[in-house]
Structures are given as structure tokens and as C-alpha cells.
Image (tube, rainbow, N blue to C red):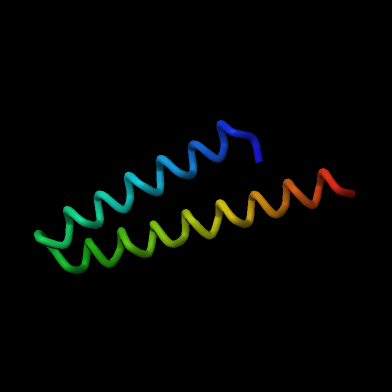
Length: 58
């Protein structure tokens, strides 16, 4: 994975985690939604990384 793409996933994940932490004190449902979005973003980052790595090997 290129460095800018990895940086994008890292920064976006941190922003989602921060938003989740802030949302906990306001609304539990919004916090749960943001938590699920954070997990999805992390998983998508791993999937993109694996696909790019596999493409470069083969």
C-alpha cells in the first residue's frame, strides 16, 4: 500500500474514533453507528492492502 493511501486510512480511522468518543456522551445510537463505521473503515483498509499486495506479487 502506498504511503498516502495508508495515511488516509489511518487519519480517517482516528477521526472516526474521535467522533465516536465524542458521540458517547450525546447519543448511544450515534456512537454505535460511528463505531461500526470505524470498524468497517479499518477492515476496508486491510482488504485494500491485501489486494494491492497480491496484485504486486502476481
